[in-house]
Image (cartoon, rainbow, N blue to C red):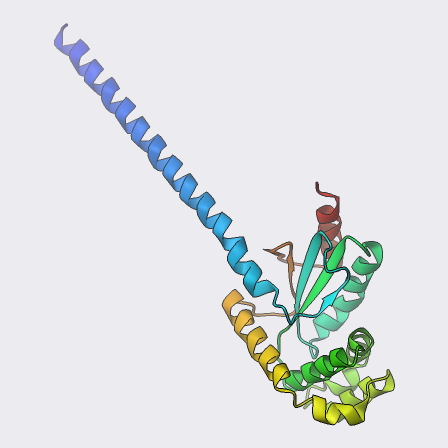
Length: 219
């Protein structure tokens, strides 16, 4: 074996060793990435849905749309008919989980209205009314929460009972837990949607319906 042949052989072995090492490194990185990806949804699921979260639609629906919303948010009001349309199109396939995100002044009181409505089995009608009449109470120069309470009363909320129920400690617990989850998930705007655990980006009315439709039709 001459010197040139020996050098070529050593070079080939070096390249093979390097390639093998690179392959192992890539495999390890891929495995680590897959493990991290597999771990993330489970952690987020605990943050996305709490036992106290209002659920619209069948509890056992195969597709879950989580909405982080602020009752005072104009964009949330604009998306509400879109969410209603999704529920109309997929009445048994989709459940909507509502999470409170109190970014605006007065929104914590609006949540108390909604939670009292839930205690009185009037959550949906009060939610619809509060959002529909949002321009009358969520004013830019300061919210008028007495107006919001009257809006709720007009669709059947017992305002006399509400005087006591609005102070229920459990409602404060809901507000605190949802605020903690909003911070943990890094939510900075409303509405923010998660579809089957995945955060949706750059959402429009059309894209939201299309994404939900795709989730429903996926095996």
